[in-house]
Length: 251
Length: 258
Image (tube, helix red, strand yellow):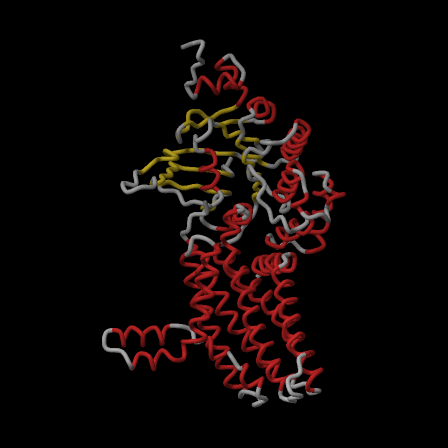
């Protein structure tokens, strides 16, 4: 089966500030493949290169070497992003718009006809439980509500691939549960979900496969059940073993 | 075109939900009404001074609105990080530039139209005369000029670090062109080489915004400018606007978003 999301020998290097301007690698030859219909967890400690990988896949930064493809199209082509939805870690939306206006704006960008857009906006605002607040400016929303607007905008084009960057960070347990339910529902609808997270329990519950990276290098990639069985421990323990963490007690 | 239109719509919404335009409009209205109510020596020509003052305020206000609106568009997208969900859609950076330009230009045009309507009402109530075509021509020429200013400001917003520095630099540059642009060739003649060539080069490179200023004709009722000349001025504006937009795109294309 053809991968929906694929990276080949992906390398990103940053030049540090200062007179010498040293080169710092953020990604070192990353090979990933995500297949249709699976929920794929992308794990790694802070600074491992998760957000850099997502930034390359969304065309925000060019790779230094290697390539990345979405639906077989080079990510440098804007059309590669026609069938994806993206939810950033923090809420980055026009706060002077209402939720309805924001969704209409994004629907227009995707070229969704007005009647169809109206239907989708109604459905999504119900799904994320923002129907009563649809006419309020986003700047008046709580953090949880803003995150839910983010989820609605990520779904406005009925994407085949959803890229979520730590979707539950900063949400209360109810909000997390809601996001998890939505991911599950998308999976049942045959959608592909790629998400980075620190919530390993959550990843273990919803993901089919995971990739673990550390210091820009892919450490492992495989099915969650197989990884857990191979290491004879839960995903948190597997993760800590793979990144080479040793507790103070062990030392 | 959908994408560019959608982006422009957001810029327009932002302008009318902010206070800048209302403050400047109220200020212009108050000063004009106060000046219009003064009667010096029962001079019937006092209305010309009111027109002169009102048009000057309109020019300053329109420039302020245009430069301030255009200068913050792309820096605000980067600072608030709204550029990320936007570029995660099938949107090219060139479309972002065009959408921002169109939004700023349409928004400044709408604000300018309100100013000119107010100007027509005030002067009409004093002169009992409504030279609609003169006002329309002055409005269209100024709006074409604002197209160049918008594109210049967008370029400045990519090049300079902060919106406040862009606003200051652009306002100084635009004011410099308006006041000194037409005299640069004369200044060049009074200088020795290589200064002469440098000043001449600047004279031929800068967009001559003063070409679009027909305030004097409106104030003194000198009649309309030939519409063909207006068409040529519009083409001149399109050429410079296009040039600045291409430069903006080239600068923004490789710009880091963080």
